[in-house]
Length: 134
Image (cartoon, rainbow, N blue to C red):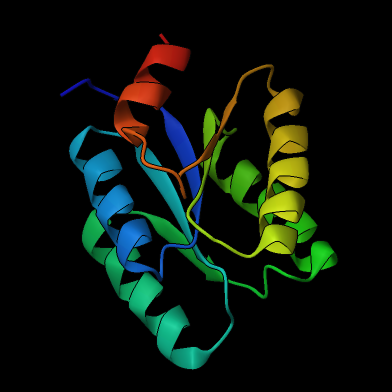
C-alpha cells in the first residue's frame, strides 16, 4: 500500500459506508484527515465525530447541498489542516459534489497543491492520492 505520510486529505461523505472505508484506508496509509458528514443530522454527525476521534482526525457535519456551508467548511478545515493536498468526495448528490469540488479546489489552489477525487466510482483512493502528491 502506498504511504501518504504528511498528506492532508479532506473527505466529504464520511457518514456513508464507502466514506468510512475510505477514511480507514487513508488513515492506515498515514494521511492527516478532516472528515465531514454531508448531512447535518445528529446521528450522522456523531458517527463521523466518533470515527474522527478514533483516527486522530478533525471532523465537521454540514448540509452539503448548501453551497455557503460547503464554502465555509472547506476554508475552515483547510486552515486547520494547514492546507489540503487532496479532496475526496464520497457523496452521490450532484449538487453536493459540485459545491464540494468547486470550494475544495479553491482551497487547494491557495497552497498550490491538490487533487480532487470523485470516489463514488470504483477507484483506489489511496493510490490516486499517492500518485498525485509524490
